[in-house]
Image 1 (tube, rainbow, N blue to C red):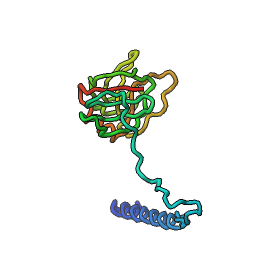
Image 2: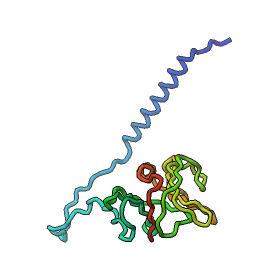
Image 3: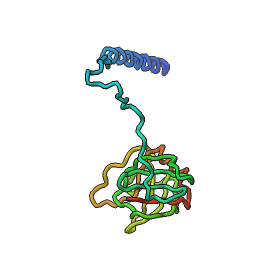
Image 4: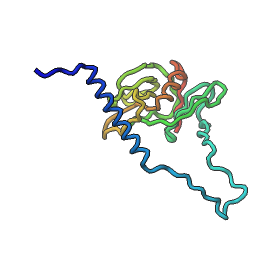
Length: 186
């Protein structure tokens, strides 16, 4: 009967092999193409008063027809949400992925909130904030547990989930307590 190698010998051998593979991959990656910066001079047509284009983009202003006071504003056309404080200042604004069923423009109130569930598209969601229903479909803000955006709905599928990013979902959950006004605008 041949002698068996002790388990520590197997672990040592496998670890050494893995380290060797990583080292070879690191050397190969180091030998690959590298980005280079091009040092170009401004063209003769550049003007002295040219302004840099890298300034941060401001989100659109809160829609004028969205009411007053502390509220969540959802623009159907812009696919954007604003969290507006009592002084009418937007505290946060972000884009969303709407479902196939949209609420009608109007004023709603957050009713039920659910920490986590499965969305009508089969995706695990959290921070679910229900505020409307249309033709038997509940409409709510939520974010996917894995942080993904929803794939396009299958033809004929009715989904009322308005999906947001994970960070925006947390902010919306904190801001949108039961009784908070949701104003839907075109």
